[in-house]
Length: 419
Image (cartoon, rainbow, N blue to C red):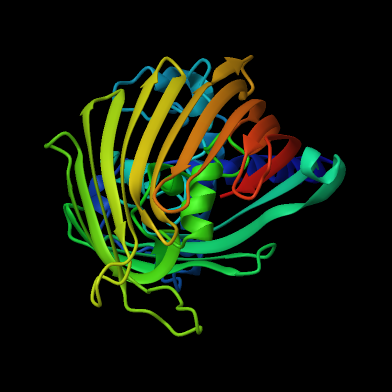
């Protein structure tokens, strides 16, 4: 009975000591002068040293047991309350009132270049590989179709991003899109992250709303103006290209991007010469960002269509206000456009919930031989959870290209993501 009790006591001690062996600092030998002695040594009575090795193993186990059950002479276990008071001791999250584990992920570089750049401002880029994805499920009822319900998966994005000290790469696909491949590029940078070179398929630097992440954008979609300029007329969007970038944080966060991109298709399906795009932005105050961008088609053979835009964004106390104006030349003649969007993010409770009312307005004017106008007024309410789930209710009354009169569209979108 005494032997069984002795064995049971040692078993409990070993189990309690394993966490200490895994997470605790090595225990210093009380006899430094013997530190150079090998563990396996010969005994003075002529033994082969096996017992000495067992004794050393036993001492290590005794040390682990002592760390698991500290006595008056044993120092505090790492992370214990009495050690947290030490100036040099690491403070665990559990010891900090209200501390929560934060999601260290960021918007992907291909989806939101400006947002992803903030990671460089906070420190060196971590060397890692991460998988990310998101799903947008949407239901709409459109007056143009007599309010017939339309349910579907608006986006099903999945991708892989790799980050090294001077190299980043990203590949993503949208399984719900006709064009499955979305981003496939590499980005080289110097040590200071001032100079960068992009190569592959990525967003061209045109229109502030196009460069914003679809997840961060409070709208369902990007609006009338972006749809007409990018999707209908082929100004901007994701393309194969080569782009250089200069970023100077000390000069109001100045960022200049310029590159050449694959051209569009001609009337006969032939590939046209390369397009050019550029964008310049500065941040004179923490709450204000202003920028200008341009897109030129067939820059080598002579530009036929082009557009220039100016934008500004103000963010204060959770309230964001963005505005953008553009003008240029399309196939149907000159055009002008105006866009404004306001939304307010209000935290609710302590579990990562937030609500986000939003309102936006857009206008588009075609001038010259064909004169036409379009406009849209949008309002909505979003519910957000810990940057991983959101529900969006939106109503839009718009006169879009091809409409004879304004029409109302109601929509609900549920979205989730991992990163």
